[in-house]
Amino acid sequence: MKRLLVANRGEIAVRIIRTAHEVGLETVLAASEPDRASLAAELSDYVSVIGPAQAGKSYLNSAAVIEALKASGADAVHPGYGFLSEDAEFARMVEAAGATWVGPSPDSIALMGNKAAARQAAKDAGVPVLVGSDGAVGPEDDVEAIAESIGYPLLIKASAGGGGRGIRIVESAEKLAGEIQLAVAEAGAAFGDPAVYLERFIDKARHVEVQILGDGVDVVHLFDRDCSLQRRQQKIVEETPAPNLPSHLRDQMLTAATDLGRRCRYRGAGTVEFLYDEARGEICFIEMNTRLQVEHPVTEMITGIDLVREQLRIAGGERLGYDQSAITRNGHAIEMRINAENPAQGFMPSPGTITEIRYPGGPGVRVDSGVVSGSAVSPYYDSLVAKVSVWHSDRPSAIARARRALSELRITGVDTTAVYLEAVLAHRAVADATHHTKFLEQSAEQLLQGTA
Image (cartoon, rainbow, N blue to C red; front, top):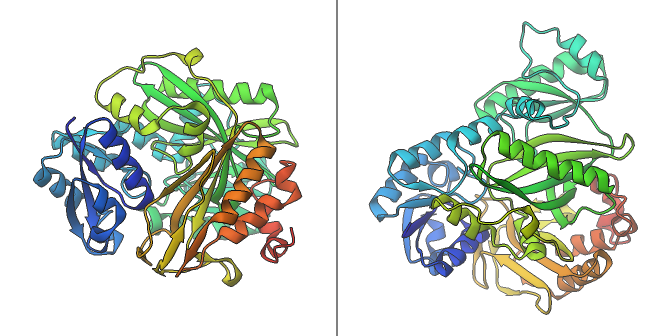
């Protein structure tokens, strides 16, 4: 590889460009029209405009990205996360164009991108999964009987879903038929695939995940992360290692993740996601993300391994070059997603121009961002403006450092979630690690008043 096309925007594009330059690669940013003036565009060696602001006409326009690839002379594509990063057909188009796809094989993406098929693959690999239907349910299935065997409440999940979308909770048998009809319609409209499956619902679950790296033969893990602090199934704070997780379940989860990766001969970076049911003392597979995760910086901070560099090495045909024993974990890391939203107004997006920005600093503080003073926050894309990550020797010290870093952050011109995140990290449930995936919703009023 000599020239890398970055098919993304914002902070992840900046992050990829920086590592690419460190390893001697030229970069081409595939950017929408308004993003040609972005920080990522300024840092990239070349910029190729692929369409107007609307993502469907630019970042999700696979034909336009392939045209940019061919015209730019790039010989590799890094998709980042979101957009086309888990589009198996796009990955095949990149390879058909003679370029290197920086990611897992298209077949792996297709397999794990279908959540029902991924569940079956996990079961075949001996990985514990939540009780649920055997694959997608159809008109020929006795859905009522399947649901009864799972028990209520349960989840209806889109097979092609992702990012917390395509999920409905069913409280009783009387609501099942109507909710399935709605779920099928929503899945078809959102993902182009109406297939849905059923799964047991855990009322107070912890969301934990394992970072893996594979070269198509060997697979290692880079330990676990906890992503239980979520709003509307969207993560806002992530940390590693997962706190208050019994050691035998942690070991089971790490082994299960690498076993699944080996079974599908995984190549590149991936994340195997689980739910921890503390009441039952169980940890169960839910899905696998075949890309770089938003929260990858915390893993880099505790291991010292640059995940983008590893992605590029593996995509270039290199083997891992190390085994599991060579990967060590040091300290505790926390990432906070700073979104341009107004918590007091229902987290309404706050697009506009950033008039001034001051990032926190000091020991153990990292900021990943695609904006500077004068940058525009567009209404067309995700509202993430920065990720503030911290490291310290233990969890209480890391939380204290995280709160200090948030107190130093200054962004004017748009509203942000920084003060809300301070309230979250100050809450006793977070300090005690007794929070769960529904904690933020159940504590919403208290957190918004800043009295937590």
